[in-house]
Length: 253
Image (cartoon, rainbow, N blue to C red; front, side, top):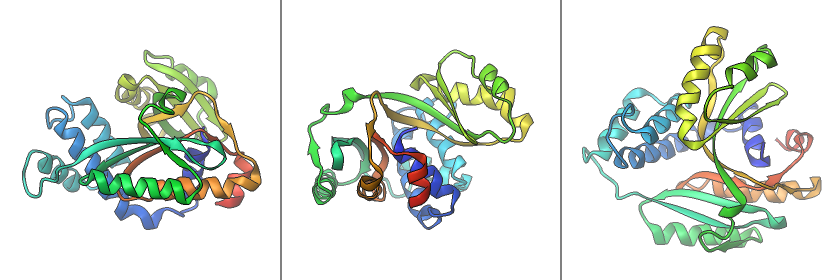
């Protein structure tokens, strides 16, 4: 698991991210609106929307809020002129970063991204400058909760699964992007539901092909930079090559 993904999970487990719930719902609503506008407003007929809705439900967003976001995408109520933008560059200690944002003001968001990179000793690059260093993957996370390793691996032997990672109590199943929703449904049907285990997160991410090791003394600086990006109102996903030891992340959380 990349350093920042692990950091995010640790903070969630320790209750350090509760104050951001309102901001998270706003971000998820934007994702639903953009996804609904990319195809039919029916999650069963629009894979991207299905993934966005499932992610919102994983975050305990009320169904009424989800329905309102889909309705807004169809022009009901306030219909924002939202667009997706991807930023790429390098942060402190040579960490490669991809930032996905959904914004109603391209110039404002670009200026603020440039400011965050610069303030933390990084540099914003051109589109494609670091994307070649990452693979797009569907990532499904759930707690092991007593599940046997062989049962997890057997359930994950299905078309579209790329890799399975067992890290203590955390399980990650990596999929091809197209297979994220179908693999999740398969895991829930064949393994998780009857074991009483819920999916904690299922979303598309960019995972580094080669990680950038970060020394313990440099970890706070790198994490401050990544957190500053993730906390921006327009940012929906931050992917980085940072590789920080678990013990360091636990100590800093």
